[in-house]
Image (cartoon, rainbow, N blue to C red; front, side, top):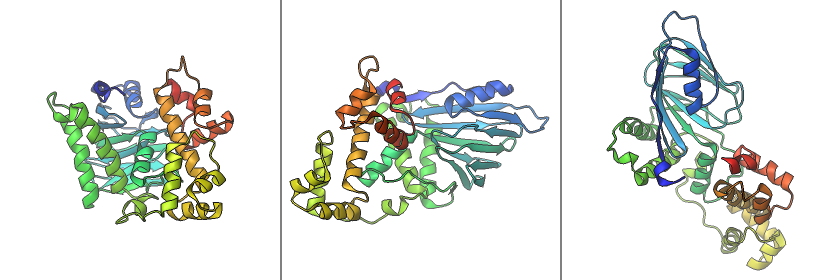
Length: 325
């Protein structure tokens, strides 16, 4: 993304038409079905939103009781924060009543559903799936062995969540000012990462304990050498035997070291690094010049079908979609 494209202020919407409201919200957040719940009050839907790179924040309100239903699995992470009133939300089989003290969290690969009380205004935060998961890997200092599994409700009364919410509120307020520093590319990039990192630290998930450790365990010298080798030569035809030989330990010692200090086998780590490099190349490539097979081969994936499966599992989309986006 070029620096002048980092901040995107979306057009404000106010409408009493159900179809117009659905289309406006779907364009910025996610496709859904919108139904009035028997209320005689006017819909009076209002939406203001801004995107800072991979993070979108918006203020959304409906004047009548409504039901929002995603018919397909979500592709992004969402946090909905009521400023007044409440909603009843469901992500997969988990449900939560969200209030100004408790936000609802929605995750990819599951459908979402909201019963929205009339005049409830929410701050809605959308995180691009790939961006949030790569932010986690940056904090971990290694590829994530498993997808992020968030608790579906977020306690907004804790000090750490209040701190994160203050950053969300600041951006939501400041984007209206044409001279605000948050709209300048360097500051916008900083706030984008602040919201990503802050959410990973403020809300509970399966990597929380690791992130909150006082300090990570130091890796033995041979394991660090093996990690550095993989990071510097992921395109090379590396095997566990070759890695072990080059760092001067046995294959068994290499595997045990990675299990204890990296959290995954060395060849899994190699695959994850290759996938990340392939993802970066696909994002930057010209689809008229470069094909998926070219990128896959460059990073050591000789079986295109297996590459596609592994890529979709990690990033949630087919590599061809990344190339075209």
